[in-house]
Length: 310
Image 1 (cartoon, rainbow, N blue to C red):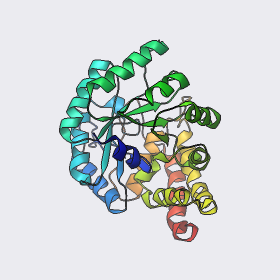
Image 2 (cartoon, rainbow, N blue to C red):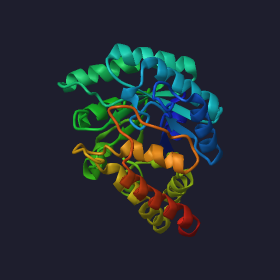
Image 3 (cartoon, rainbow, N blue to C red):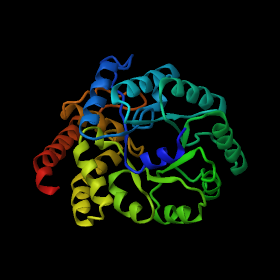
Image 4 (cartoon, helix red, strand yellow):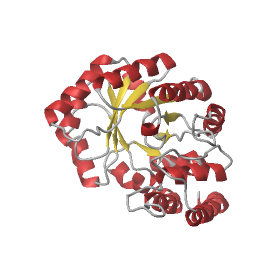
């Protein structure tokens, strides 16, 4: 593992890739996935996170997860960086990390812990055990209060921890966590384009994208504008993408649960853009007709105005 290189690689847009399934949802469409990845690579994507939440991690088997990572490695080329998601017990993460390494991945992203009960000392032990068990770079994924500021600060001192994906809508907490953490890690805004500017000001040098699966040129242009400090251009692009993020945040027809549209928007957007998106697996459902129409409108507007706004 080249920790210095990996930290540098995460100073970019991290494409949290969606997994296309066959029409009956029983298998992964690896041909479609490979084609998607090749096209993203052609337009400039270099950092990929398979088997994350956008990749429906919890709807995949371990065998499917490893095969998805293999497809990423084969389809993206030697200059790509692959950080694959893994969650669950220490043993499961250890075994997945070993399989991911054999498949050619560069890093493992440890999913936010989903245990009903947790203790900070136990979380420290959990993450340290994972770091001790793999030669891959380790990315910590924070999606809630369970992974505390103190835990993150300690973990940044591990050589193998190359990045932190901070996916909590709290810029104040993010900025303080960055200030309080002594280690050399790359801080990644894990809540995408909407917060790319504000998190960049507070220390994020990269961000993750879901909509980049179907509007990659727009999100790569946003990243470039932020990197160059061209804030007016960055705000213009960000505002053009905001309706997509707003739609993803909605519950979806017939549901009261937050962000039920998140992955279905990405997958239908991919279908609109000529990629292979396809259906989602339970517990998600595909977009309702009304939300499909809304997404079509937003996508057409971005496509028709992109050259003018960037």
